[in-house]
Image (cartoon, rainbow, N blue to C red; front, side):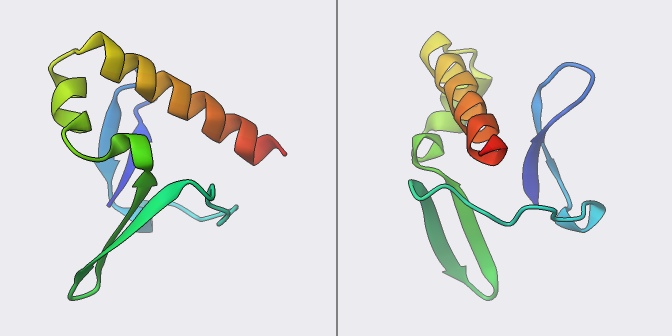
Length: 80
């Protein structure tokens, strides 16, 4: 599963990776990688750790601001 922004309202949603073609496999150096075993992994911005998603879905303004900042950095990363 990967997290993408829904086109209609930019809400982050989980989607099966097999629905996409990876055109740029580069990952920013400050992202975290976790191995949960049994072939399950997580790679994500360090800011999205801990209770980030709970706070985001509770409409916490700081979490929403963090989300937007990470998205902007990711766009810049892939433009380079």
